[in-house]
Image 1 (cartoon, one colour):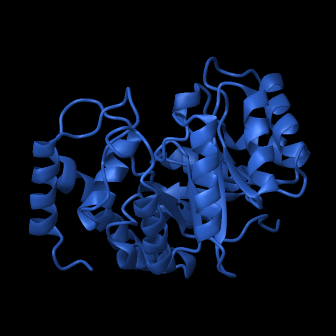
Image 2: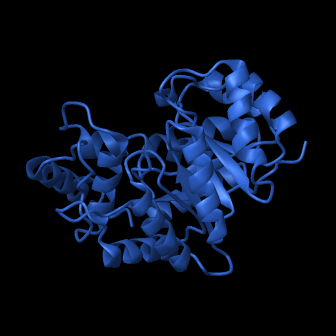
Length: 303
């Protein structure tokens, strides 16, 4: 069964906020350029880590406009994340971004309540079918109160031809196997803790959460999986699993995803602010300083 979307290493763009919660445009543009220079061609923004759940319509439009301008290279593929409790709002934002040139979108299920089977199908049909010239990746995360199974994706893929990919942050072997075997025509994008597991079953893609920190290591990780070098891939998988414990083992309490992702960007680029949009909190100066000390102690020779 042919896969609907190419095998990729997917990069994530963060949003740099000033102290007054306005976007720092110059830092944002340089951040996108840095990701491109690091070798990423498929880049998305405004997923959960990129604060797509928190931006106003005005901020959404400002960010997409800048992102589109910076992603104009012939080999570059911009993807825009759209998150909302309202399906109509999702459609409105996609329509606005599509008019500006975006054709790849990352969508998540509404999270106010878990969708039934009929509601799930209605959401994908209404959103995806409204834009037949666009391609959609579904971010499959527990925060939406329903994690889709391989059987769910089989039904969706059979009904919706422009649903082409999924993104999963699981590290559960059974879930990975279920996705890869029941919906092999969708391009499943896994974070680093599951990419090697997916590669045991066939072609899948990598979203390295540490990609901004170690782009060369991320490229090695991806290429080993792409070329089926499983023994070497598992060794890299083991090395990747130590990154977060070594950098963030001192951090206690609960923080939203973007706090960690922005910390990683800041470790490589101290000009990038780690602030999140209120009410979400980022790490304090002491926590960030200890993470930098750990970065310099454990990973000085990685890149």
